[in-house]
Amino acid sequence: MLTGCSVVMPALFGIRKIEEFKLVDYKSFLAKIPSNIEYVSIISSADQFKNVITKGADSIQKKDLSQPIQILYFKDNQLKSFHANCYAQGVFGRLNWNTFNRFEVFLPKSAIQYDASNILLENYKSVFPEIKLQDYKDYTIIIFWTNLLRRISLDAIETVIENLQQFDKLEESRIYLINTDKFFTELASGN
Image (cartoon, rainbow, N blue to C red; front, side):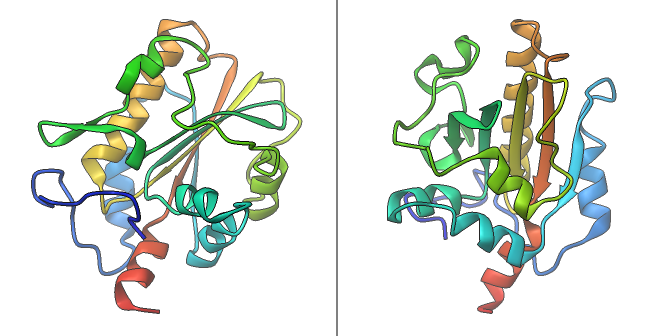
């Protein structure tokens, strides 16, 4: 489901083969996130991620919502900014999440513009009960990540953190890191 992505050099971009969800890999990834950053970590089942994909209103949204790495910014219940690996330009074995200076402002400029009225925070809450709807935080940021693209996933999280720090929005934002390894291992096995 890397539709829209050009995966020419897997090793260059750090694409790893994952055959099953491994708790040790999950924990070692989270250990790389600075300890002063507050976040909620969620392990998605394959069915939960499939449910997320079905939230797309059309084939373009479904393609976007199926990408391995996604960054979604919500203000209240509304999606305000969307980023996926296929909308970031490749640079020397990495992805430049700040393509077109999207992260030079807060809220970051969305990588794609479409009617996102069907992509609501409450829809994600219905899939992932850990997500809070009513909160004292102004912004909710959901980052989908996978050990399949470990380096690029970490770069995405670091880009979000740097942007929040630059604009002094860290305290106003709740971050959810959702691992999708179970979905991509099921996809690789053909189930």
